Length: 286
Image (cartoon, rainbow, N blue to C red):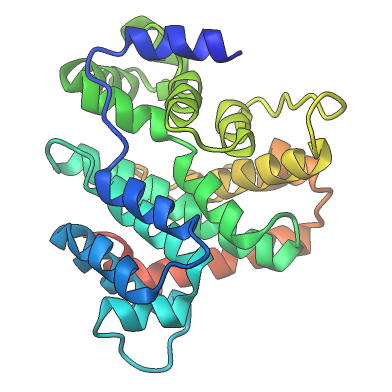
């Protein structure tokens, strides 16, 4: 598996490095003696990441009772696990070489799925909410990397998919050597993220998790199903899409089937994700 991922990474013309501020913060969070001042210094080394992180921390999504004005205050309030999610989200948003409509839609899709995953995990107890947020954020990392490494090919892929009325996933093989799921998993493996994130990114569409062969296989399956369903809810609502897919039957999606959800549970999750994203959109996207 690792050898295959190395081969994939070697074919990417221009592989984005893991954002430096994210690397530093993750290192610090592994230090039991780290303090808020050191974390604040690391984050503030990238003003754009600092600004994005404070903006999201002040959204109603994180239920803060008063405005957060400093990084140290944000770190103290949100806690280390949520801080990890916020820094990675803020760092990945800044990874694009340019930020036009295509990049904005890619980011809205990623952030929408991350938010949806956190909501689903909390409502359904299907996964740890912070793990689910990151798994949703990483779901289409492969497309962000494709756009980074070869923006002309990626733009042609998207335009062809739209003009032919075909899903981007079905056409990826005509423009790139590997599917976005494989690219995303390979890059996460390269960046040394846990196998949970690598496998959920690789299989969020096909749900082919070998439960018996994976450590904590059932938990991985439920996390991957959470990502699948959150992505489908985004598709139905039009989050990160050209238009909503109002005909999509969420009850027939792999995620809803694996999680054995009732129509009431799915509809309740759909309504909450729609409300939360709509109310907080300006904090998440921009």
